[in-house]
Length: 297
Length: 212
Image 1 (cartoon, rainbow over the protein chains, first blue to last red):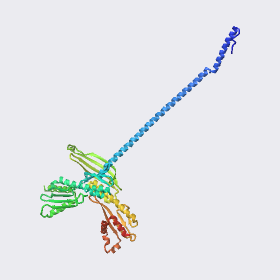
Image 2 (cartoon, rainbow over the protein chains, first blue to last red):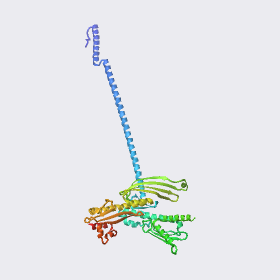
Image 3 (cartoon, one colour):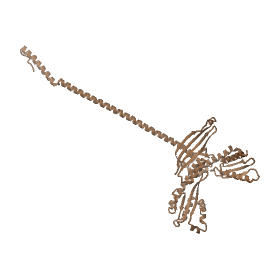
Image 4 (tube, rainbow over the protein chains, first blue to last red):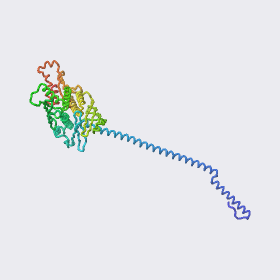
């Protein structure tokens, strides 16, 4: 409202000021109307504040939930790793046990008398020998797996007919070759064992040296029968796979004819040598002697 | 496996038998108890044996002091005697060698018998099946006559395995009365000579031929 600025001095001045005041008031009213009233503002503020607080609460709640879930997932993954590890450890232990068992079984093949080890070229076969429960020497044959199969090197004594056995079976039947060799070596070991024991333990019975060949299949010796007489024994093991002689001859030392008793004894001894291992025969002689000594005394 | 044996299980227990006296003399004595399970073809075995190992300054000696063998199947009577002998002599290796050759011969016998059964199904019969130890030959023309081939696999004292074949002619009494030349009596001997000449398969083939 435009107040006239011209006019009488007082009235007009008063009217001017009043008018100005009115104008200001009107302006203020307009401004008040435009902006809200204070109590509304407060109400609105508090409403917003509540909303903010609520939102904050919700945010915190969600944050906590996320954290909680994260922790749970971590624990779960940790647990599953542990679980995997336990399963893995158990599997490893089982594998280890199985490996030990296989190793043990491979060792056990020695007890069958024939065992083999793979080599870069083929296989090395170990042949074990024994006689009457006594484990004796072992021998080996190193085979090269080629066509034809060949023996690279071996520890078989030269007097064992390796070439003959190989010629017969090596190319056609490896198993037969190995078992034949096994037979020959075990028999040789057994014969050698008997001869060694005779020479060692029962040397007192021998009146002369024990004559033996390297194959131990021809033995010749003289032994005391009693105080006065002795016999000569000749044992031939023609079959190289046996440990009992195929041919035995017991003859008296000296030229005189044998008495009936002596002849009986000679025949009995011959039979003994044919059916019992050498050292067992002499062990029985030793027992007889002991008996006769104890009877005499 | 290379040797025809398969070991399926092995366990070992060791016990120290060294006394104070032995230790003074520098001797060590250990008792090992072994248990092996396995099989050779269709025969399964279970062995338990003890080895005493004595170690002195000069040498080591290992002696098998006890051997127990259990085998399945037990129908092979020829084997049971051999097994007892092996146990008695504590001869572990002889047992395995003998078993190997025995099984080989068994398999060969089975193959031979089965071959003839397949080739002449009407004439040949195996009373105990393929693992039978005898084979009967009966001609269709004269069913009363039967030639029975008995094939035993014998294991001797040393563990050597040998086949033993015998012929048992089954002839009705009336026919025996007619047999003036004693052919039936000499048949078993003739059979053995034939074996020497023709071998096992040749002999069986010729016998079957004669009955057809």
